[in-house]
Image (cartoon, rainbow, N blue to C red; front, side, top):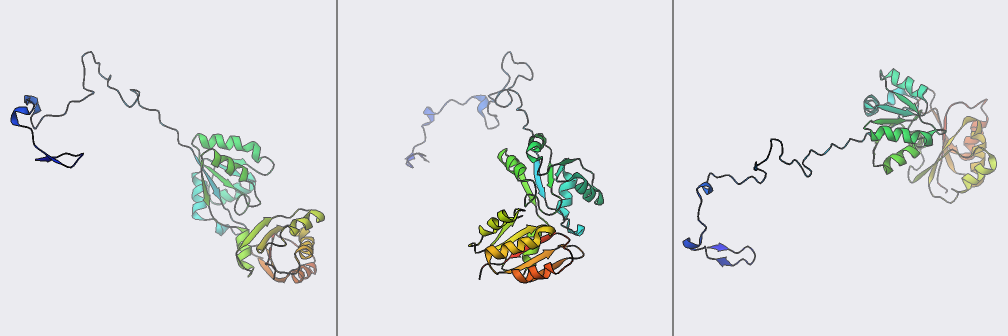
Length: 285
């Protein structure tokens, strides 16, 4: 007895007389007929391969775009993965070829460099995309820290992602996070706001936008505008706890903590302000 696969009901095996006549080649050692076996008139190599009778052409591999964080001061902060990304890159797109060239030379790495900065990024995007589409791996670097964050790279990354290119982040040094964790202010939620506008009126309007935001603020500022920026922040945000980080990861690293007015007064008493500054402003009380 066997079972009907559709209804699950037993059915009888066919009578011996009803069974098909067994041919000699149908024995237990017989092989199934090859539907593509040689037919009359076939020539060697006439058997079809794939859907069209010929091997499908290989799809070219797209390259990868690796966004590589580089040291913000201490060269020892270049990670092994960053070194690997640079060593394996067919092209390094960087903010300043001289700066990145020195960094790579110090690591014994010699790769082709292409400048990509705020003034030419849009013009460079087609060239970099063409390299990626041809299978080249591209490393993207800024002068210091993580690209895109107040640095070039966003336009390229967006275009690459839209084109279906794999974009990989190689994390590492960041002045934003270094200043935030050293500030002793609440680390989250926080908002990075970049550089304020250079002119006073626009700068005050800039700070005013964040007056009601219950976040710690992280601000980049240049030495010659820092005091004015602190004054404008105080005027628009009111007295708040703050920290100013200077020369992070370098020999003369310094973090000043206090209220906005206290930090402003302490810096104003100095003969000059030098270095790179990150201002961290605490949440309103």
